[in-house]
Amino acid sequence: MTDSNLLGLTCWLIDTRTLWPGQHIKDAASDILHLLSNDERNAVLRKIFIADARMSLASALLKRLYISRALNIPWRDVKIARKGDPTHGKPCAVLPDGSFAPIDFNVSHQAGLVSLVGWNPPPGQSQSALVGTDIVCVNERDDYRTIDQEGFDAWIDIYEDVFSEAERWDMKYNVDYITLLDGRIIQGNSLGRVDRCVRRNKDLSIILPTGETHSFNSDLLIDAKLRRFYSFFCYKEAYIKLAGEALLAPWLKELEFQNVRSPKPGTVARCSTHGTWGEKVSDVEVVLHGQKVDDVKMTLQAFEENFMLATAVQGLQDLEAPPFTKLNLENDVVAFAS
Image 1 (cartoon, rainbow, N blue to C red):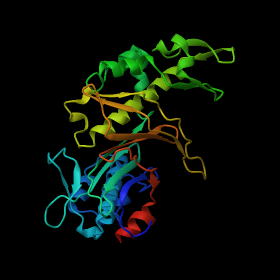
Image 2: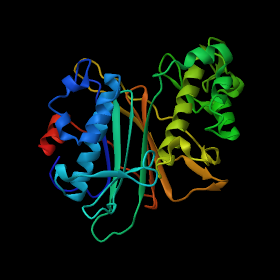
Image 3: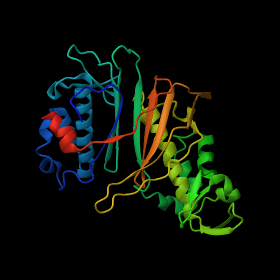
């Protein structure tokens, strides 16, 4: 990473899962915390669990790094406020005169990963834009407990305040693909009415395109539906974070996603190998208040086996966010800050 300022769209990712080992962030990151303001540092230290503190620290570092580089100002001069609501409003950079800087950025964190998406207009381009990002981890929570007790359809209805009736029906009874135990991928339109199954541990049979009858456990189907649910969730979070409203948005159920596909996963880190990126999809359709949204471009990319990262870009016609760049804490962040 160079010292030149950032132009256009930026996508960063930092993995905190192996950073700052220990039980208390104050001790584990004693050489890093001084890089933050008092308010930022106190926000990190208030976290009860060190996993949350790591992500909070990385989030603060990424925002400060982005603002410093995008505006070409010293690290120590970075000032951050919130637009609108002083508690829930979207974070923004503040210029020396007290006005908001003409850049936009958003961060997300989940299960050890922290992402940042930013927009800085190139010279001569005054076009403003809004950006949003979200991260989901498919297996982080104990979703199966409720699914096993009440069925996948009942589990989906837990989110009736977040998703419309049409979205919930789509998630319950449709699936984009399933992956068999031998690695073969079967498209959802080849499953017949097997896709209506909402229970785990059931014996299912399908006729493959080759004419072969194949039996499999319904756990594979429910896992695929669960992954697709998190795709919906990731898209919705990234979109509503464009304006910084998050799940407080009163129009949440009026925001619908169609043609949702869950990107095929990458691989987890093993021994000396790093985790790999999986498929990236960018053909989701967005509908708000019954009307198709044409000024927002969204992407969803898989990372390792269980993560998915969404980006939302509004106001730049069909320009979509570039691939995420993984940052190294020492080389890309600390070295610049110092």
